[in-house]
Amino acid sequence: MNAVSSPRTLLLAAVLSLAATASARADIVGREADITNLRLGQKIYVDDGSCPSGQIKEVSGLRLTAAGVEASRKCVDRKGKR
Image (cartoon, rainbow, N blue to C red):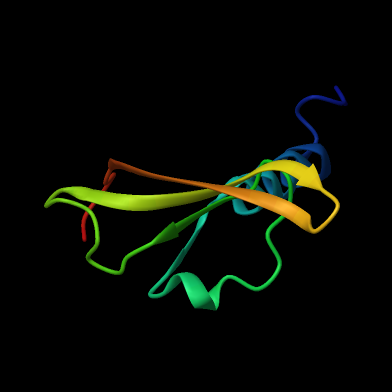
């Protein structure tokens, strides 16, 4: 039996694909105060109504400082249904 067509190999590939998708997903919170542990490069979307219609606030871990991770904030286009 060919290793590529093995059901076990296909199942493993599907599980790994789902795991990668879940870890790449950005979180959406209602308030910026709900962000507790921001990591470098992590993006969290804040739906607090502070951005214009059709946009959402993106908070991302910009750089590491002595006080912790410095956050960058900007309004970006909202993707998908609200």
